[in-house]
Length: 68
Image (cartoon, rainbow, N blue to C red):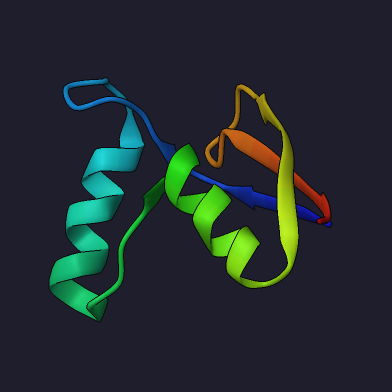
């Protein structure tokens, strides 16, 4: 399975993801996630985070999950 999403970096890491995180919290009650949070989310669904691939696009990360 592949997820194409913005992944939060460390605190203070520049980029659009922190701004989108604040926007989602204020407007929709949602949040962006970091790689560890995606790993926990996948594990709860019976999957394992296999690979993350950074791209140079607006949604800069492809996250690959496989069966656990």
